[in-house]
Amino acid sequence: MTIDQRTNVRIWKTIVLCAVCLIVGCLAFDRAEACAVAGSQRGVLFDHIPEEVDAPVIVEVTIVGREADISSPDRTPLALMNARVERVVKGTLDSDALKVVTYLGTCTRIGAGHGFVAGTLDHDARLGLKLIAIQRSYEMLIRGR
Image 1 (spheres, one colour):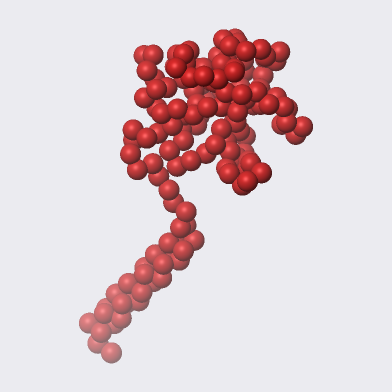
Image 2 (cartoon, rainbow, N blue to C red):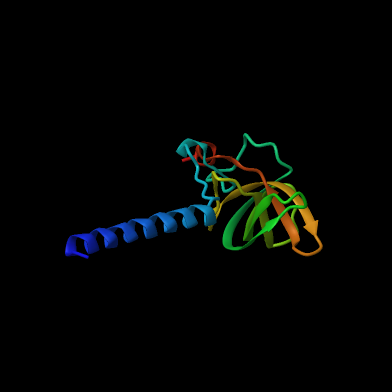
């Protein structure tokens, strides 16, 4: 075998190996999702008191951490965040800490920070007091700036 033939065989093996790795990677990681349009991002932490949202509870909170995602009974993924309650704007709340729960989608923005969260209070035997947060478009969340 000549040097050119060995080089061609080596190149061919490299190409085949890359193709196999690409196929395996695509099969293993077929759930890659992203928000296609930046304007369609959604979140739960308002920069202002959300007057345009009709919710039984509105609280000013500081999100201090995020726990592992959980699933609803119908297997919908949910984000679970720990929040410190700064003040209650609407409704009644007798705790200075609560869990903020919201549905996760490809365009859901979740993170730590300070702001206002609107939603419905619920008590879970396992999680304790939780606020099922209402999501809104990112533009509505920052409208008060």
